[in-house]
Length: 195
Image 1: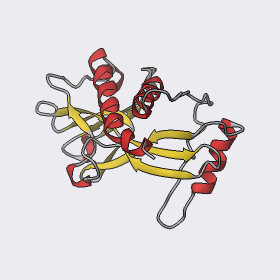
Image 2 (image 1 turned 60 degrees about the vertical axis):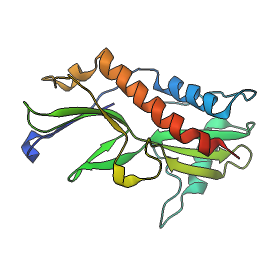
Image 3 (image 1 turned 120 degrees about the horizontal axis):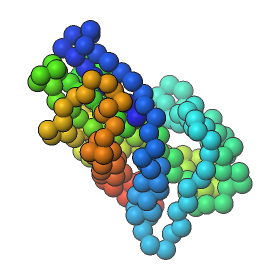
Image 4 (image 1 turned 180 degrees about the vertical axis):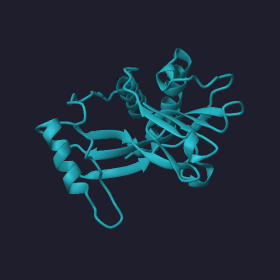
Protein backbone atom coordinates (compact mmCIF):
# COMPACT_ATOMS: atom_id res chain seq x y z
CA UNK A 1 0.00 0.00 0.00
CA UNK A 2 1.25 3.43 -0.91
CA UNK A 3 1.16 6.07 1.81
CA UNK A 4 1.97 9.54 0.51
CA UNK A 5 1.91 13.07 1.89
CA UNK A 6 2.05 15.95 -0.56
CA UNK A 7 3.01 19.09 1.33
CA UNK A 8 2.78 22.72 0.37
CA UNK A 9 6.44 22.55 -0.69
CA UNK A 10 8.71 19.68 -1.66
CA UNK A 11 10.03 19.64 1.91
CA UNK A 12 6.61 18.54 3.15
CA UNK A 13 6.45 15.49 0.87
CA UNK A 14 6.71 11.97 2.29
CA UNK A 15 6.31 8.52 0.75
CA UNK A 16 6.33 5.00 2.12
CA UNK A 17 5.26 1.64 0.68
CA UNK A 18 3.76 -0.50 3.43
CA UNK A 19 2.93 -4.18 2.94
CA UNK A 20 -0.64 -5.03 3.92
CA UNK A 21 -2.63 -8.23 3.99
CA UNK A 22 -6.13 -6.93 3.45
CA UNK A 23 -7.45 -9.66 1.16
CA UNK A 24 -7.34 -7.43 -1.91
CA UNK A 25 -6.49 -10.35 -4.23
CA UNK A 26 -9.52 -12.25 -2.94
CA UNK A 27 -11.63 -9.14 -3.43
CA UNK A 28 -10.48 -8.95 -7.06
CA UNK A 29 -11.44 -12.60 -7.66
CA UNK A 30 -14.84 -11.95 -6.06
CA UNK A 31 -15.48 -8.93 -8.32
CA UNK A 32 -14.38 -10.84 -11.47
CA UNK A 33 -16.77 -13.63 -10.44
CA UNK A 34 -19.61 -11.09 -10.13
CA UNK A 35 -18.73 -9.56 -13.52
CA UNK A 36 -18.80 -12.85 -15.47
CA UNK A 37 -22.09 -13.89 -13.90
CA UNK A 38 -23.52 -17.25 -12.90
CA UNK A 39 -22.50 -20.47 -14.58
CA UNK A 40 -18.82 -19.50 -15.01
CA UNK A 41 -16.03 -20.74 -12.79
CA UNK A 42 -13.51 -18.14 -11.62
CA UNK A 43 -10.30 -19.31 -9.95
CA UNK A 44 -7.37 -17.43 -8.58
CA UNK A 45 -4.07 -18.57 -10.10
CA UNK A 46 -1.47 -18.72 -7.35
CA UNK A 47 1.88 -17.14 -8.12
CA UNK A 48 4.93 -16.03 -6.17
CA UNK A 49 4.94 -12.49 -4.79
CA UNK A 50 6.40 -10.12 -7.34
CA UNK A 51 5.90 -12.55 -10.24
CA UNK A 52 4.05 -9.94 -12.30
CA UNK A 53 6.27 -6.96 -11.47
CA UNK A 54 7.63 -6.94 -15.05
CA UNK A 55 4.19 -7.55 -16.61
CA UNK A 56 3.57 -4.60 -18.94
CA UNK A 57 1.48 -5.40 -22.02
CA UNK A 58 0.65 -2.80 -24.62
CA UNK A 59 2.69 0.30 -25.16
CA UNK A 60 2.59 3.06 -27.72
CA UNK A 61 6.04 2.62 -29.23
CA UNK A 62 6.98 -0.88 -28.20
CA UNK A 63 4.17 -3.41 -27.90
CA UNK A 64 5.02 -5.88 -25.14
CA UNK A 65 1.98 -8.16 -25.49
CA UNK A 66 4.12 -11.18 -26.45
CA UNK A 67 6.44 -10.73 -23.47
CA UNK A 68 3.46 -10.42 -21.15
CA UNK A 69 1.81 -13.51 -22.65
CA UNK A 70 5.06 -15.44 -22.09
CA UNK A 71 5.20 -14.27 -18.46
CA UNK A 72 1.56 -15.30 -17.97
CA UNK A 73 2.32 -18.71 -19.51
CA UNK A 74 5.03 -19.29 -16.89
CA UNK A 75 2.44 -19.04 -14.13
CA UNK A 76 -0.63 -20.69 -15.66
CA UNK A 77 1.19 -23.66 -17.20
CA UNK A 78 -0.89 -25.32 -19.90
CA UNK A 79 -3.75 -22.90 -20.73
CA UNK A 80 -7.07 -24.43 -19.71
CA UNK A 81 -9.37 -21.47 -19.12
CA UNK A 82 -11.59 -19.45 -21.43
CA UNK A 83 -9.92 -16.21 -20.33
CA UNK A 84 -7.30 -14.99 -17.91
CA UNK A 85 -7.73 -11.66 -16.15
CA UNK A 86 -4.64 -9.90 -14.84
CA UNK A 87 -5.11 -6.92 -12.53
CA UNK A 88 -2.00 -4.89 -11.77
CA UNK A 89 -1.32 -1.56 -10.13
CA UNK A 90 -1.52 1.55 -12.24
CA UNK A 91 -0.51 5.14 -11.68
CA UNK A 92 -1.60 8.67 -12.48
CA UNK A 93 -0.54 12.26 -11.98
CA UNK A 94 -2.35 13.69 -9.00
CA UNK A 95 -1.23 17.10 -7.80
CA UNK A 96 1.38 19.06 -9.73
CA UNK A 97 4.22 16.68 -10.54
CA UNK A 98 3.19 14.19 -7.85
CA UNK A 99 1.88 10.79 -8.89
CA UNK A 100 -0.12 8.19 -6.99
CA UNK A 101 0.04 4.46 -7.67
CA UNK A 102 -1.94 1.33 -6.90
CA UNK A 103 -3.96 1.14 -3.71
CA UNK A 104 -3.11 3.76 -1.15
CA UNK A 105 -3.73 6.86 0.89
CA UNK A 106 -2.63 10.38 0.03
CA UNK A 107 -2.72 13.50 2.17
CA UNK A 108 -2.61 16.85 0.40
CA UNK A 109 -1.98 20.26 1.95
CA UNK A 110 -0.80 21.73 5.19
CA UNK A 111 -0.76 19.85 8.50
CA UNK A 112 -3.79 21.76 9.82
CA UNK A 113 -5.85 22.02 6.63
CA UNK A 114 -4.81 18.89 4.76
CA UNK A 115 -7.28 16.52 3.17
CA UNK A 116 -6.79 12.77 3.02
CA UNK A 117 -7.95 10.53 0.19
CA UNK A 118 -7.90 6.80 -0.47
CA UNK A 119 -7.13 5.75 -4.06
CA UNK A 120 -7.43 2.60 -6.15
CA UNK A 121 -5.54 2.72 -9.43
CA UNK A 122 -5.44 -0.62 -11.23
CA UNK A 123 -5.03 -1.75 -14.82
CA UNK A 124 -6.95 -4.73 -16.18
CA UNK A 125 -5.81 -7.02 -19.00
CA UNK A 126 -8.02 -9.81 -20.32
CA UNK A 127 -6.12 -12.59 -22.11
CA UNK A 128 -7.46 -15.29 -24.42
CA UNK A 129 -7.45 -18.60 -22.55
CA UNK A 130 -5.68 -20.57 -25.29
CA UNK A 131 -3.28 -18.22 -27.09
CA UNK A 132 -2.84 -15.88 -24.08
CA UNK A 133 -3.11 -12.93 -26.48
CA UNK A 134 -4.40 -9.71 -24.91
CA UNK A 135 -8.08 -9.32 -25.86
CA UNK A 136 -8.95 -6.20 -23.88
CA UNK A 137 -7.09 -3.79 -21.65
CA UNK A 138 -7.85 -0.67 -19.71
CA UNK A 139 -7.46 1.33 -16.55
CA UNK A 140 -10.20 0.70 -14.01
CA UNK A 141 -12.21 3.83 -13.32
CA UNK A 142 -15.28 5.16 -11.59
CA UNK A 143 -15.55 7.86 -14.27
CA UNK A 144 -15.48 5.80 -17.45
CA UNK A 145 -12.70 6.88 -19.78
CA UNK A 146 -12.82 10.56 -18.81
CA UNK A 147 -9.25 11.15 -17.64
CA UNK A 148 -10.06 14.83 -17.04
CA UNK A 149 -12.01 13.82 -13.93
CA UNK A 150 -8.83 12.48 -12.39
CA UNK A 151 -7.91 9.15 -10.82
CA UNK A 152 -10.36 7.20 -8.65
CA UNK A 153 -10.11 8.70 -5.18
CA UNK A 154 -12.45 9.22 -2.25
CA UNK A 155 -11.99 11.65 0.62
CA UNK A 156 -11.65 10.21 4.10
CA UNK A 157 -13.84 12.48 6.21
CA UNK A 158 -12.81 13.30 9.77
CA UNK A 159 -9.42 11.63 9.28
CA UNK A 160 -6.42 13.16 11.06
CA UNK A 161 -3.09 12.46 9.36
CA UNK A 162 -0.91 10.63 11.90
CA UNK A 163 2.74 11.25 12.72
CA UNK A 164 3.97 7.99 11.19
CA UNK A 165 2.93 6.43 7.85
CA UNK A 166 2.33 3.05 9.52
CA UNK A 167 -0.32 4.62 11.76
CA UNK A 168 -2.46 5.23 8.65
CA UNK A 169 -3.29 1.50 8.60
CA UNK A 170 -6.60 1.65 10.45
CA UNK A 171 -9.84 -0.32 10.01
CA UNK A 172 -11.38 2.83 8.49
CA UNK A 173 -8.66 3.09 5.84
CA UNK A 174 -8.84 -0.65 5.17
CA UNK A 175 -12.61 -0.52 4.60
CA UNK A 176 -12.29 2.59 2.40
CA UNK A 177 -9.53 1.01 0.27
CA UNK A 178 -11.52 -2.20 -0.19
CA UNK A 179 -14.65 -0.24 -1.07
CA UNK A 180 -12.80 1.96 -3.58
CA UNK A 181 -11.19 -1.07 -5.26
CA UNK A 182 -14.54 -2.89 -5.45
CA UNK A 183 -16.18 0.17 -6.97
CA UNK A 184 -13.61 0.66 -9.75
CA UNK A 185 -13.69 -3.04 -10.57
CA UNK A 186 -17.50 -3.17 -10.58
CA UNK A 187 -17.68 -0.21 -12.96
CA UNK A 188 -14.99 -1.50 -15.32
CA UNK A 189 -15.02 -5.31 -15.37
CA UNK A 190 -18.49 -5.94 -16.88
CA UNK A 191 -17.54 -4.17 -20.10
CA UNK A 192 -14.18 -5.92 -20.25
CA UNK A 193 -15.63 -9.36 -19.63
CA UNK A 194 -18.34 -9.01 -22.30
CA UNK A 195 -17.63 -10.90 -25.55
